[in-house]
Amino acid sequence: MSKYQQEFVASTLQDTGMLWNFFSSVIVTKLESDENSKVYHVSLEEDPNGDYWAWLDLKDKQKPEITLVFPYRESMEICFPYGTKVEEQRGYGRVIRCKVEKIQELDWKRDQVFHVSPVAKEMKE
Image 1 (spheres, rainbow, N blue to C red):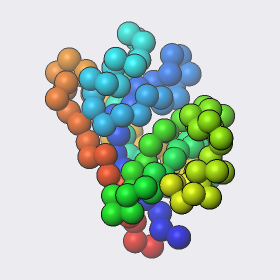
Image 2 (cartoon, rainbow, N blue to C red):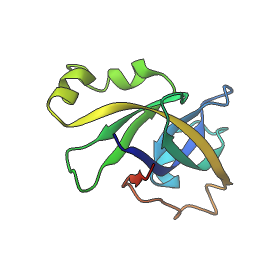
Image 3 (cartoon, rainbow, N blue to C red):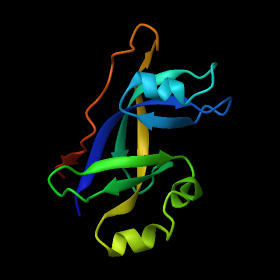
Image 4 (cartoon, rainbow, N blue to C red):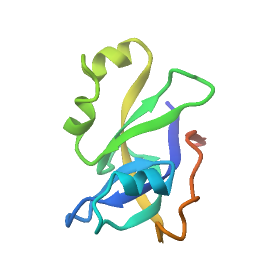
């Protein structure tokens, strides 16, 4: 099975230091964050021992996309009315574990136009 990597913009979750609000643009990430959150350009990589959970959207097989990234699986599960298992059985995607690495801290005012591609890259093993 292939592994995937994708870049995002994410913000810190209150005082926990965990990352939250994974989007492709600074503006959207900041709109979803509290005013004291730090904003980062991050790289998310599929890793079975990772600390984060995500949905690998496979509806378009030519453009897989990692979406719905959370530090808690339950936060992702509630996004699916019938649960992720049903969506996996339909072939729409799969749940993956991920590790996240901060690339750089962003100044949301200066870097407003910063955005990343919403397409996951397949990693060669």
